[in-house]
Image (cartoon, rainbow, N blue to C red; front, side, top):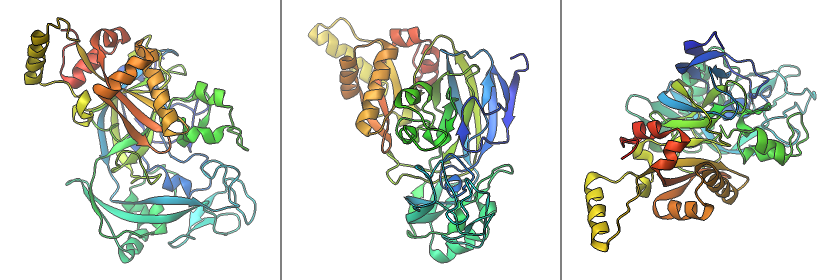
Length: 437
């Protein structure tokens, strides 16, 4: 990787697939920077039949020195929304327009074309049309949807009524701020406005970010829950459950604390790691309960660092301190003084030196995802599984990232273990605690 650069700018996208079959956009030096503009995820690619995945993520960037069995730490330096409006909501499928999975294997039920090219005519549910025959061709509908306008400077948003949604649909490309090389239709063209006048804060994050799986698969299916749709599927990306577990990297997390200021540590399953990103959301509560949130275009800047010898199956997240669950937050000076006094009062001579750490787990259900996250934590830290259960209960938390099956397993971990993992400097950087005390 002698052609590695200090800064790599990515301006094109993978067409809905992640994996070793996608040509890298370049190679960045260990410690270097990746910059890109990301298109919206989910609804835009979903209503664009040529996409074989539910997102539109960047082509991967290789990291100099990253080898299979290592990990790569990603510092999220900039995650900023560029869209002025978006639309989202609860989805339903249109029978007859897909084979097994409407995210992956769409076809025109009029002319039979597979993953047909398409265009937008007018606005509303029937706006997406097949280039071959002119028939309406989207495989998705809203059961309840909304159009939302965004104030990026003041970090607030507001859903709008039908008249405004129709007006926005007439200028969808510009208001969505789709990057020049994006291939998706804007979901704003559908102008679905079931909720009017609902205000909310903006809190942008990346829903799909990580390292390249070791086999090509749809970008939205790089996780244990959505990935389960590939098991025995009637299309070219079908896998067994064992193959899915082997190849995926759980980049599709929809974890709302993967935002500016966080540090994400990802497994390396292909030489060079292959960092990719996309699916920025303007906001989302825990759980993405509606199935989709406010997908937006945005600007992203990352810094990467290779962690040699840290073998992971899925991501570790060092959340911002203000995103940590209350029981996992580092103790204040006064609290530590009180703990010292409590120990002295009872004759306890040992007080553990620890820091918070979060493991991402994914699976078909939330129970499966929780078990997966706990298993990963036990495997990587070497702590007994049942001890992880106790630590997450009294000094941490289990939090939902996405339904049906992505969770965060957070707990206070002994610093000696964090040092052995090779990430003590990252933990110290993130939480203002010394690497060893």
